[in-house]
Image 1 (cartoon, one colour):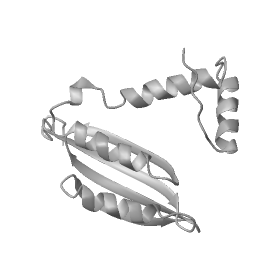
Image 2 (cartoon, one colour; image 1 turned 135 degrees about the horizontal axis):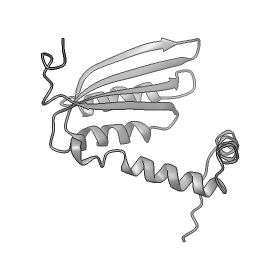
Image 3 (cartoon, one colour; image 1 turned 120 degrees about the vertical axis):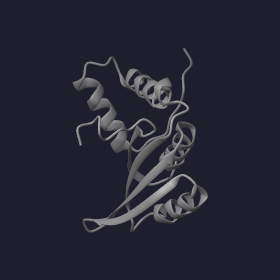
Image 4 (spheres, helix red, strand yellow; image 1 turned 60 degrees about the horizontal axis):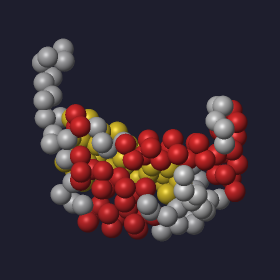
Length: 142
C-alpha cells in the first residue's frame, strides 16, 4: 500500500483521531481511506446517469476572512446553464450561507459540487440530488 502525505489543520487532525477512536477504527489512515472511497463513489450511482436532476448545494463560510463569496459568484456565472437559482444569507455574526439550486445531468452537477468543495476556506459543503424526469405529483398522492 502506498503512503500519502496530507496537510490538514491541527483541529481537523484531532477530530479525525477522535472519530477513529470513538468508532473503532484502527487509525486515521483507515478513516481517510473510507472517506475517500465514499467521496469518490458519491456520483457513481448508475440510477442517476442520463437523467434530468435537481440538486441543492449549500456552502457555509466566514465572510470576514475569506474570498469564498467572490468564488461563489464566479462559479454561478461560469455554470449559468446549470444554476437555476442562487440564494445568499447571513448566518450569525461572521458567517454566510450560499445556496444553489441546480438543474442538469449528473456529470455537470458533480463537476459543480467538486469545484465548490475545492474552494479554499469553505467551511462546509452539503448537497442533495433528486431525479425529476419521472416525477408525477398525482401518483405521489398530491
